Length: 174
Image (tube, rainbow, N blue to C red; front, top):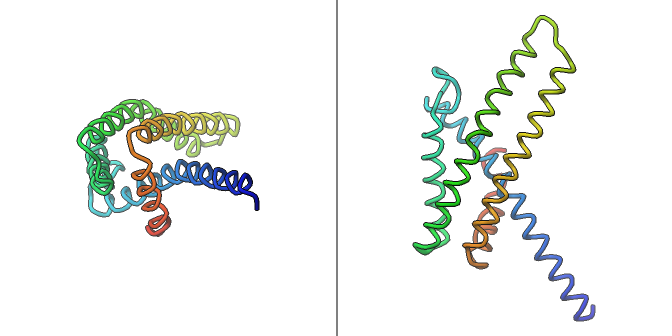
């Protein structure tokens, strides 16, 4: 293989790893959120209705902030990096709040549609499309936050995070 081909292969490999990292983080957080919900529900302070492990958005935010602190510790982040990344996370939480509220409304509408005497297929399809658009909206907010955080972290810190994700991928029973 010529040096040009080798350079192109290395560049392609790095780009692939970058995109895999961007894809792995939302998947990991989604899986983590499911695990947290299940664990929290078992402990009686989850994210369902009262009596079924109901928790508050504030409890979820506090949990996520603790996880962020652990990640920043693992990356040996500087004080300025911590401040910047926490500001990014705070912005993301604020931007996600309406998404979470719309999700609850769509969830309630979907339950109502399925428990009606007659299920209206067109109405359910309309709700499904709204859910899909909402997932895309949340994904855009999350991706923007991830890219903003990537600008704050060093390449070595991003590699450390990617290695951590790869080593822990799929180890939570999902």
